[in-house]
Image 1 (cartoon, protein in one colour):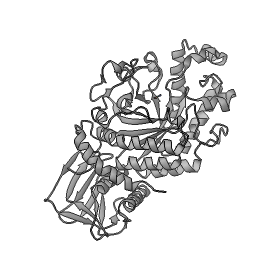
Image 2: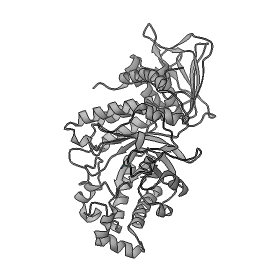
Image 3: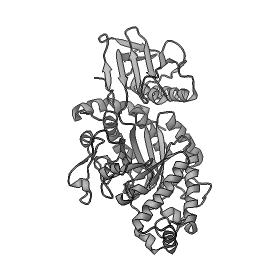
Image 4: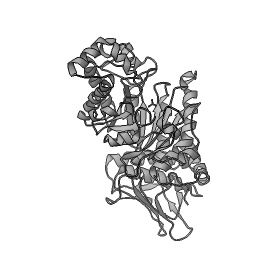
Length: 476
Ligand code: ACM
């Protein structure tokens, strides 16, 4: 078995135990575009960090082939007895995944001038289309360097979605030209930083999923612009608020031109506060909205519909009540996480596609709560678990049938307790250590949704992959 995580779906060793020498060149005639160029530059950068070998365009090394029959994200990697190394894919995400596999399979040749690969023939493709990680940068500011490390980590393990929880009660970390008082002083990213990060991620097959949490978890909005967003500890539901939110959502979309998804939060809103707001009550009367739960779904339908009008797919956390599922567009991807506000089978019956972020074992709350790797290996994308007695999933696992529209799974790293750390650096470093230990298991269970990889074998493979990761991470 190759020391690769997630484990390749189909592989065959050919022709015995020889090795193939790979000179640091690539022929990319089959992939002439800019996207492939960025993907190869990224690979060359990693090969340099890991093996002090920069790959360049030229003959006698790796040959890229375009094979339209390969599925999205899939690739074929061959190091043959004829001494040739070929990587085939139908598009750049597959190319990126194949290059990560190549690096994991490689050693440095003895003379230091080439890589050495085992003879191999791999055909690999993901089963889960969403293999994700979320990092909460709002509760604790994460220096931008950690976000680059996180993208490097995602690249190695073929994690293709990085959700950034940019806003919460503690801060708004996004820049804004439309609302210059919104970004929290001293703890927000700049437009240039985010553009560069987005490009860095895109060229590594990682899609950034920006999240702006609303209508709850949104204190900075009301503090900066109470006349627009209200001052009740929840965003108001008034026409002027929706107009302001539309401006904000359009701005976030323009900050992330590569992002097909915009996450609008929707979790844990203190909706009873709307009952004390005369403006929100007048809005309900005007629209014939009869209950606070209906208003919650109405709010989410307005912001998700607007997001759809921009050509982006909206995402919401589980939070709205199932009685009002019909109000929200079924093009919205819903994250089932707590199994409390409503459970996955209800959301599926309501017609939604789901992303599995089951609290147990996919939540990390540094340093207090996290689950063993073995628990992630024991989970699958059709199952939800929880320890919290109010969650339906605490009584027994909730499972849905295979073939249900579950797009995949995502590890979520929350900063609830990181706020207590005096240093941003230390907080981010400790969190990163917990993530890098668990993300490969999530990768395994979303790439191969039926994987029965044992903990013992996982550890053996992980020892190799994590040692390579160590070399890939920047030291500056
Ligand atoms: C969440 O954990 N509040 C989505």
